[in-house]
Image 1 (cartoon, rainbow, N blue to C red):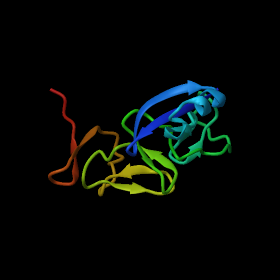
Image 2 (image 1 turned 180 degrees about the vertical axis):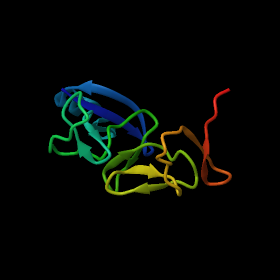
Image 3 (image 1 turned 90 degrees about the vertical axis):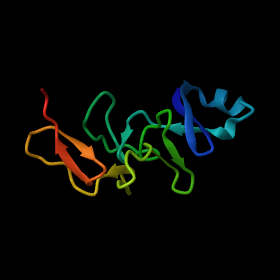
Length: 122
């Protein structure tokens, strides 16, 4: 059994677990693209782990509903979170124009200023 994403107009509309023979028998089989639950950021991880295992990173990221399928590059990635963020290859993840501060505080992105604002809880 494998995970498959249904892609319509370049967007993932459904993700299921199915046998390849089941997918191939569907009238819209070409709309279903295999995705790997263990692939994130262009790296394959051991099941239920944050440890890369050297496996094949299938299509850069595990597909989720609403994700983009880029047929030219044969990859899945999240929708763009903000207009100023750019996609990075080979991870196919979005990066802000200003890196997230690593000072232990919590921040939220401010698209107007293209910077991180410290999150202050009242």
